[in-house]
Length: 240
Ligand code: ADP
Ligand code: MG
Image 1 (cartoon, protein in one colour):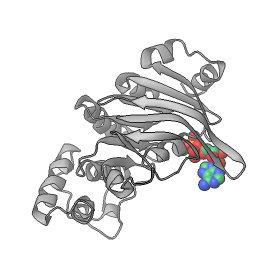
Image 2 (cartoon, helix red, strand yellow; image 1 turned 135 degrees about the vertical axis):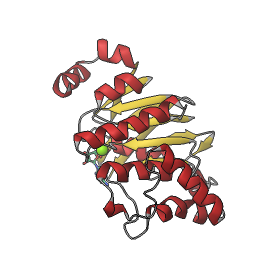
Image 3 (cartoon, protein in one colour; image 1 turned 45 degrees about the horizontal axis):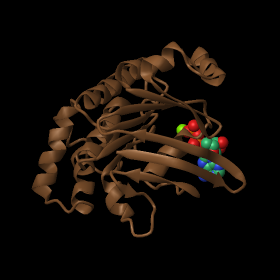
């Protein structure tokens, strides 16, 4: 579903990604971890074309991201993305947050958009909150609305970039529970997270990055039991 092939990227003279390759199969959950500054966010953003690459290709569901002739807006509409800081529209109700993209980007009618929005709001356990503004919800609830909003767009894949790192422990748990359920339901997911308990339970594979390179690409149990590189061993030693 996602294929990253030999991509390299520079910010000016600084090489942020060096010859990275990875793939996420349909229904697979892949955890991307590594030290701060290793290039995780940049790699994830190449998948929906938010960060162009100078070498290599990224393909999502058979479409080459950023190629001449690719309708990037149409592709992006089908790639769900949830960031660390919930990016709900603060002046819109939860209902309008859930429906705006469906109406403006997918061209759905209002009734259908509301019905789908509420369906996914129920799935993240927040039915009844649709008339509130984001600021009237807790951080964990806001992040669950962000997930529901992405799901209402019928995403091919879901990208998560440290979705729980700005949350208090209880909220972390409620957001991870929603993500675990999504994984069980077969969603294709690429997740940047330091939540190693979640990773062990939910991820099929783990990618470990350091200094712009993917140093490990292992089955989850193999990664935790016996990381192949000293850098990954050190990293695990520090965060577990
Ligand atoms: P991570 O998500 O693993 O912490 P990032 O992908 O955010 O890493 O950043 C990787 C490196 O690229 C860091 O050294 C960061 O400072 C640098 N970087 C990120 N964005 C930019 C940018 N827009 N311009 C220049 N350097 C950047
Ligand atoms: Mg990051």
